Image 1: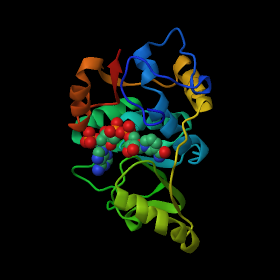
Image 2 (image 1 turned 60 degrees about the vertical axis):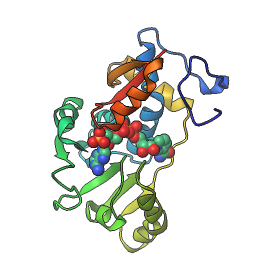
Image 3 (image 1 turned 120 degrees about the vertical axis):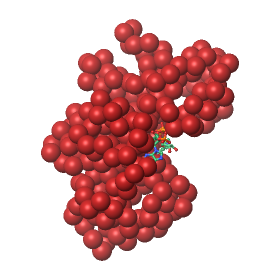
Length: 225
Ligand SMILES: NC(=O)c1ccc[n+]([C@@H]2O[C@H](COP(=O)([O-])OP(=O)(O)OC[C@H]3O[C@@H](n4cnc5c(N)ncnc54)[C@H](OP(=O)(O)O)[C@@H]3O)[C@@H](O)[C@H]2O)c1
C-alpha cells in the first residue's frame, strides 16, 4: 500500500517520511498525530492565518482533525465555535471551544452568525450557505466532505471571490514531515494534547471502524500493535 495507508504490524516507508517519536510520547499518542494534525495545521496557521480575536468556526470539531484544529485555533488567539453532535458538546468545550453548536439541532449557516474563518471537515452544504456564514473578507476552507459539495466549491468558489470579498476554497493537504515535527514540539511543550478516545488491538480493526462510524468517537481511535 504505497500511499493509502492501512493497518499492519510492519510498513515499508521512505526515511524522509519518518519522524522520531519523543521518549515521553506513547506509540498510541504518536499514531494519533500525522493525518489529523497535518490537516488542522494548514487550515489554522498557513492558509487560515488566524489573527488574535478572530471568530473561527470548526465544523466537525469533535473528530480527529477537529480536536487538533480547536487547540491550534486557541493557541493563535481565536474565538472558537465548535460544531459536532449532541454527545460531543462538553468534549469540544474541554478542548477550549468558546461556543459550541449541536449540528443535529442547529444549522450554523442559518443562525445569522458570521465568521472570519470556517474550517469544514465534514462539508455537505451549498457554497451559498457557506458564503452567508462568512464575514466580509472571511475565508472558508473545506478539508473533507461530500463529493457534490467538493465539486460545487471547486467550480463556484473562485467566482464568489471575484464577486464578493470572501474566499471559499478546497484545502488540499500534502502530508509532510515538517508539520509533524512542528506538532511534535507543541505536544512536547504541553500546548496541544492528542486526544485518544479508544485503543483497539489489530485483531479488532472492524470493531474500531464500526465505533468511529457510529459517531461516538471523541478525538482519535487508535489501533495498537
Ligand atoms: N484535505 C485533504 O487533503 C485531506 C487529507 C486527508 C483526509 N482528509 C479528510 O479530512 C477529514 C478528516 O476528518 P477526521 O479524521 O477529523 O474525521 P472524524 O474523526 O470522523 O471527525 C469528523 C467529525 O465530524 C462530525 N460530523 C459528522 N457530520 C457532521 C455534520 N453534519 N456537522 C458537523 N459535524 C459533523 C463527526 O461526528 P459524528 O460522530 O456525529 O459523525 C465527527 O466528530 C475526512 O473527511 C478526510 O477525507 C482531507
